[in-house]
Length: 115
Length: 118
Image (cartoon, rainbow over all chains, first blue to last red):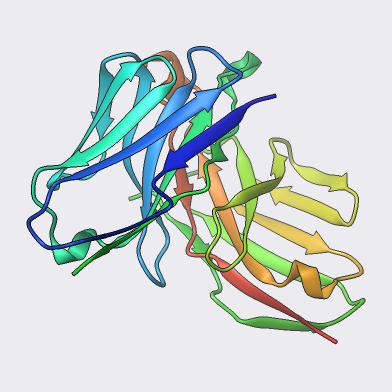
C-alpha cells in the first residue's frame, strides 16, 4: 500500500529565516505530487504540482519554491520566510488512472508558524 | 475563476440523524468530484468520490451529483459524534488538461463544519 510522509510535523521559524519541508511517497511509482497551504480559517490553496522529476508548476507567485529531485520526493523551500507564510502545509500524491481520472491523497502535514 | 462554494456552517445535527452537506461549482467542464473529511488539526482524508450523475453509496455515506445544476452533496446517515469534522468538497479539472501535461488540479471549497450532538 502507498504511504506518504512529511517532516517536520511542526516548525517555528523567525521571519527572514530559510525553510525546507520534505515529502516522500512509498509504494507507488511516478506519482503526481502537490504542495498545498491551508491558512487558519481558510481553504486549501494549491502552491505547486509536479508530474515528474524536475518538472514543477507554480500556481501562486510568492517567495516559495519547490523541487523534485527524485521520483517520490518533493521539497518545498524558501530563502526568507514572511509572517504570511504561516499555515498548514500539505503534500499530496496521485496516480492517473484510466480515463484521466485520479484521486489525491494527503500526507499528515507540517504546521509552520513564522514569528 | 473556477469556484467551489460551501456553506461554512456549523451544521449541527443530533446523533442518529441524517447530515446533508452541499457544494456548488462554477466550471461546467468539471468531471470528478471529491469529499474529504478533516478533523481539527489533521490533514484531509478522502471519504468519497463521484464521477457520474446520480447517487453513490459507501456505508453510511452517499454522494449525490447533479451536473446540470452544478451541485454535489454528501449525506451521512446515522450521524455519530465521531463524524464531527470539517467536510471539504473538491472538484477536478477536465481530463483533457491532464493529457496536455497540465497536471491534475483540484479546486477546494472552504469546507462545512459538521457538529453531531449527543
